Length: 510
Image 1 (cartoon, rainbow, N blue to C red):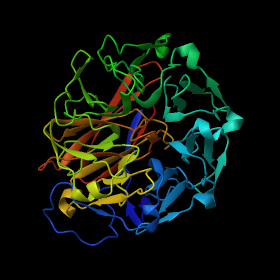
Image 2 (tube, one colour):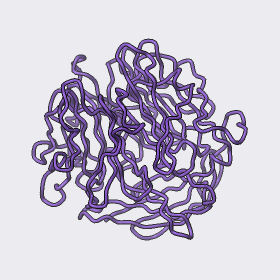
Image 3 (cartoon, rainbow, N blue to C red):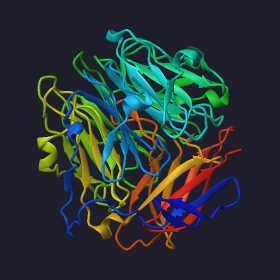
């Protein structure tokens, strides 16, 4: 028996090397007014909190820092103290000063991950070169009550124009390593050796000196380890680095031969924010790239190559985009796409919410988001636990804020979903990059693939459950978890669960 938000559920442990435990067959109650059924696509309302109107927000990331079962929100700021919003059910409280996270520096990076595998989510925070201070690795000393900066002790307090930072297990040794992208110096990869980190950037060939601002880790060639796509600015080509480290090799950039380098471009153009998912529900992972210039959509082809389909389409226009995030807004089983646009001197450059209808996109951006949108951070997360995903934005303009929008799906549609927490055998969050596939039961029809977050939504990494909306008529699904083993094998197992479930998948790839 386990207890979640004061309610009890039976847990079903499953033997074997991949385990599933059912921790809830229905979403928890929502502390908000009832919503009439049949609401239009993309109907949101702003969550009321005067602090959300404060300017200067850049990265934003979700994680359950206090292990109380709901998601808390970190927002990195420019010109104000950073925020750590504790989710109290009906409200959010900023506890950053109380727990030691109220940094005053210009914050560009926020990445949650359990680097010491103790069951408490830690936070890496990155700054700009202008401030001249080292990045900070905050160890969560227990249930979010206090965060202790151990960056200097562990040698990861680098100084620079820090951009996307990711916790990932690049060498498949069952702990999370640390990748840091920089705009003005070579990128860095630190191997987690338990009590310390070792800089392996040069030895594995990942020390890309180009002006990197965005990163996406995923198994691009489906060989059982994590590869990395990097977006570069100021005319620099993008990179697609295949991981050969686990096969006694190095990372190898195949972007030119795979036609993923962005093509020739001038100083004012470049890649910014990549976003990974299976947008067409064919079982493999595709890549959207927010650009200064026309945005790209790379569809994964059968031969492990990628075909660019964005050019000339509604999602491939020049929106001067900074970041993007995939999420199934209406729980119909097809992932929609939010793209943030940015111009330095404008507070509310129009953002875009693209509705995905069986792999085809239409622009259906709600008016409320056009009035108060983002410039940098964008994250989807079910903060209120009702089964649909809500939208968190961050805008660093002096006249803007960091709004949180509640998704107003009716109750029946909101519960037409599955959410999957992915953990290791000890119940810890050490498997970013693991893949979840969903199949209709009993037909076996593939419903799509999702990825445990490895970073995105502008220089952030969240630790949230993997969310699937379900097509109408699907009442039961088979959930399949795929993880990488130390010897490079992709290991999978399926379990059947009812629609509306929140499930916990545990994996031990040894």
